Image (cartoon, rainbow, N blue to C red; front, side, top):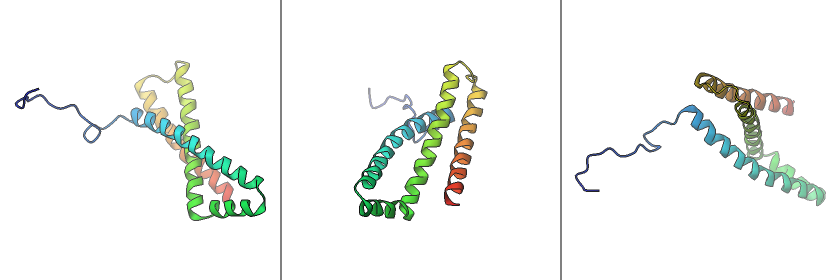
Length: 127
Protein backbone atom coordinates (compact mmCIF):
# COMPACT_ATOMS: atom_id res chain seq x y z
CA UNK A 1 0.00 0.00 0.00
CA UNK A 2 1.59 3.23 -1.10
CA UNK A 3 1.45 6.56 0.67
CA UNK A 4 -0.50 8.09 -2.21
CA UNK A 5 -3.28 5.52 -2.02
CA UNK A 6 -6.55 7.49 -2.01
CA UNK A 7 -8.87 4.59 -1.25
CA UNK A 8 -11.15 5.22 1.74
CA UNK A 9 -10.49 3.46 5.01
CA UNK A 10 -12.98 0.95 6.32
CA UNK A 11 -15.55 2.49 8.66
CA UNK A 12 -15.01 1.74 12.33
CA UNK A 13 -17.19 2.02 15.40
CA UNK A 14 -16.37 5.67 15.98
CA UNK A 15 -17.78 6.54 12.55
CA UNK A 16 -20.20 3.76 11.65
CA UNK A 17 -23.49 3.65 13.56
CA UNK A 18 -24.53 0.05 14.12
CA UNK A 19 -28.16 -0.81 13.34
CA UNK A 20 -30.40 -1.43 16.34
CA UNK A 21 -30.42 -5.18 15.71
CA UNK A 22 -26.61 -5.30 15.95
CA UNK A 23 -26.63 -3.23 19.14
CA UNK A 24 -29.21 -5.55 20.69
CA UNK A 25 -27.15 -8.57 19.66
CA UNK A 26 -24.06 -7.16 21.37
CA UNK A 27 -26.18 -6.30 24.41
CA UNK A 28 -27.56 -9.86 24.52
CA UNK A 29 -24.04 -11.29 24.62
CA UNK A 30 -22.99 -8.74 27.22
CA UNK A 31 -25.95 -9.49 29.46
CA UNK A 32 -25.14 -13.20 29.24
CA UNK A 33 -21.64 -12.47 30.51
CA UNK A 34 -22.99 -10.14 33.21
CA UNK A 35 -25.43 -12.81 34.38
CA UNK A 36 -22.52 -15.24 34.74
CA UNK A 37 -20.73 -12.69 36.92
CA UNK A 38 -23.96 -12.13 38.86
CA UNK A 39 -24.09 -15.82 39.69
CA UNK A 40 -20.80 -15.37 41.54
CA UNK A 41 -22.55 -12.80 43.75
CA UNK A 42 -25.36 -15.30 44.36
CA UNK A 43 -22.86 -17.97 45.40
CA UNK A 44 -21.14 -15.50 47.74
CA UNK A 45 -24.53 -14.66 49.29
CA UNK A 46 -25.34 -18.35 49.77
CA UNK A 47 -21.94 -19.01 51.35
CA UNK A 48 -22.47 -16.03 53.65
CA UNK A 49 -25.87 -17.40 54.66
CA UNK A 50 -24.35 -20.82 55.32
CA UNK A 51 -21.50 -19.37 57.40
CA UNK A 52 -23.77 -17.97 60.05
CA UNK A 53 -25.49 -14.83 61.20
CA UNK A 54 -22.47 -12.50 61.26
CA UNK A 55 -21.46 -13.40 57.70
CA UNK A 56 -25.01 -12.98 56.49
CA UNK A 57 -25.34 -9.62 58.29
CA UNK A 58 -22.22 -8.40 56.47
CA UNK A 59 -23.62 -9.53 53.13
CA UNK A 60 -27.00 -8.00 53.90
CA UNK A 61 -25.26 -4.75 54.83
CA UNK A 62 -23.59 -4.68 51.42
CA UNK A 63 -26.75 -5.62 49.52
CA UNK A 64 -28.83 -3.00 51.32
CA UNK A 65 -26.33 -0.19 50.64
CA UNK A 66 -26.85 2.21 47.73
CA UNK A 67 -24.18 0.33 45.75
CA UNK A 68 -25.77 -3.02 46.57
CA UNK A 69 -29.14 -1.74 45.35
CA UNK A 70 -27.47 -0.48 42.17
CA UNK A 71 -25.88 -3.90 41.58
CA UNK A 72 -29.16 -5.70 42.25
CA UNK A 73 -31.11 -3.30 40.02
CA UNK A 74 -28.59 -3.82 37.23
CA UNK A 75 -28.76 -7.58 37.71
CA UNK A 76 -32.56 -7.48 37.53
CA UNK A 77 -32.54 -5.42 34.33
CA UNK A 78 -29.88 -7.68 32.84
CA UNK A 79 -31.87 -10.79 33.70
CA UNK A 80 -35.09 -9.44 32.18
CA UNK A 81 -33.36 -8.20 29.02
CA UNK A 82 -31.62 -11.52 28.43
CA UNK A 83 -34.88 -13.39 29.11
CA UNK A 84 -37.02 -11.24 26.79
CA UNK A 85 -34.42 -11.21 24.03
CA UNK A 86 -34.05 -14.98 24.43
CA UNK A 87 -37.76 -15.37 23.72
CA UNK A 88 -37.27 -13.17 20.64
CA UNK A 89 -34.48 -15.48 19.48
CA UNK A 90 -36.70 -18.52 20.05
CA UNK A 91 -39.32 -16.94 17.80
CA UNK A 92 -36.67 -16.41 15.13
CA UNK A 93 -35.62 -20.05 15.47
CA UNK A 94 -39.22 -20.98 14.60
CA UNK A 95 -39.00 -18.76 11.52
CA UNK A 96 -41.28 -16.04 12.87
CA UNK A 97 -40.59 -12.30 12.94
CA UNK A 98 -37.68 -12.32 10.52
CA UNK A 99 -38.84 -9.45 8.30
CA UNK A 100 -36.84 -6.27 8.89
CA UNK A 101 -39.87 -4.32 10.13
CA UNK A 102 -40.79 -7.14 12.53
CA UNK A 103 -37.21 -7.38 13.78
CA UNK A 104 -37.19 -3.64 14.54
CA UNK A 105 -40.57 -3.85 16.28
CA UNK A 106 -39.61 -6.87 18.38
CA UNK A 107 -36.40 -5.11 19.44
CA UNK A 108 -38.43 -2.19 20.74
CA UNK A 109 -40.83 -4.58 22.48
CA UNK A 110 -37.87 -6.27 24.21
CA UNK A 111 -36.56 -2.92 25.47
CA UNK A 112 -39.96 -1.78 26.75
CA UNK A 113 -40.68 -5.17 28.34
CA UNK A 114 -37.30 -5.07 30.07
CA UNK A 115 -37.98 -1.61 31.51
CA UNK A 116 -41.53 -2.46 32.62
CA UNK A 117 -40.62 -5.81 34.19
CA UNK A 118 -37.62 -4.33 36.00
CA UNK A 119 -39.63 -1.40 37.38
CA UNK A 120 -42.58 -3.60 38.43
CA UNK A 121 -40.22 -6.02 40.18
CA UNK A 122 -38.54 -3.21 42.12
CA UNK A 123 -41.80 -1.50 43.04
CA UNK A 124 -43.07 -4.80 44.44
CA UNK A 125 -39.74 -5.48 46.20
CA UNK A 126 -39.64 -2.06 47.87
CA UNK A 127 -43.24 -2.10 49.09
